[in-house]
Length: 97
Image 1: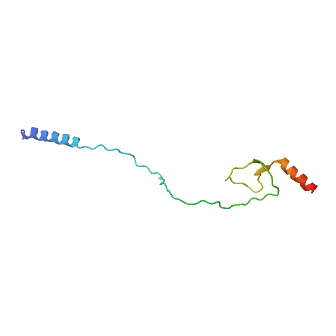
Image 2: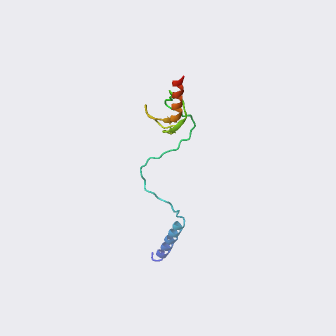
Image 3: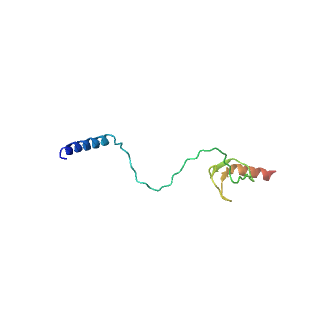
């Protein structure tokens, strides 16, 4: 039995070295719960929920616009102002007629 011990211990060290040579490094990560968003690509058409046609009592040259195109507005909100000299000229012309 004494003679077999060196032989057996020699086999063990070779098997350990062989196993170490074939080790493959791997990355590990802790498992966590999270939401994942999957991108969706599609085509289509967008339309306004409601479209309103604008009508004015008086025509004229716009002096200033107070809202941006596509922005939401409320009933009665000031959208634009006209050049006052044009309105005055139209009123004077209507009075003289």
